[in-house]
Length: 75
Image (cartoon, rainbow, N blue to C red; front, side, top):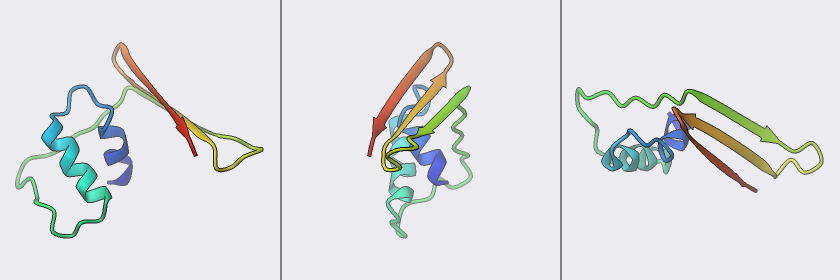
């Protein structure tokens, strides 16, 4: 669920309300509403995560959703 929430932020096809719901779960809010019978699906076509060997706190990730790619990096 955590990985789905992290990927969902960048998904161009997932409605904003579903993105917010997944992020609420990621924040650990036990009282978060449930989507009922609705299924939330996050499916990037490509996902790459890199971690530096010299600085383990540094990371970068690239997600591909069709022709759209997003990149993120940080500590």
